[in-house]
Image (cartoon, rainbow, N blue to C red):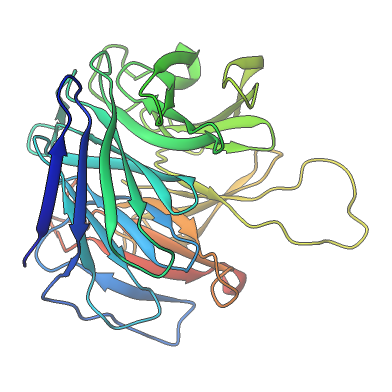
Length: 352
């Protein structure tokens, strides 16, 4: 693989801007089937895919936690993934979300798979901005180092026009608001009961996935097995209501809201559906506003969805009902010792 990188480090500041021409991964063998799911791509060897975001044109962006690499995958093609960038001076990439048109916020830091431990003070937020709508050339910038952070993970866009995102600290049990334009950040949400680690003070992940939806911040807690929310000011990210634990289905990682569809005669009440990855349980969960949950795909005794970590819906007409799920291949919790390359799996939720 060849990566052409031109870097400029501005004097007097820590911002790093990089212009990258992507190069494809050599090995690629996408698998298709007639089932309601298929493997879009499986990395060779071992790979822990941690998070996923979708570009407006349908391309997928995935982060790896076992190495600090950002990839682009076209789910409609048999072409190999493209390595967009290898991040310097860190060991892992975590959450990713679109903060502006074709501009993505990415969490980078030091997290160790062998010891399952974090390095406090190593985390920062980067932005990856595509140079044009039909180009894979991307500009990388270190937007906001956060030395106080313990273990940054989930990312959710708060105010795209202002460049504001919410970032969960899984080790400290709180949420930062970060301005990716200026680098400013502050703690805006904190609740030990729904966001904290368990046992208290452990290295287990507390708050994990984070999403902003209809005036609320929704989030999972992996250690406590919770799905919660809090009403927020959508400009500042601060709480305007109580913290609510909606349900406790067990181990959860990241999640996605299903696209809203018109339902004749339905005009009132909350109307959303969440799909959540189960990570250690190798399952996909469906959650509704009444707190009910069910397993709709996978099994604790199956490796079809081994170590699922995050998911996102497609954004084009052809895949708007397709949920793309990424996995760690069992690196975190191997089933009977079986470990495989991390996968991107496409699931047609309407067919489940």
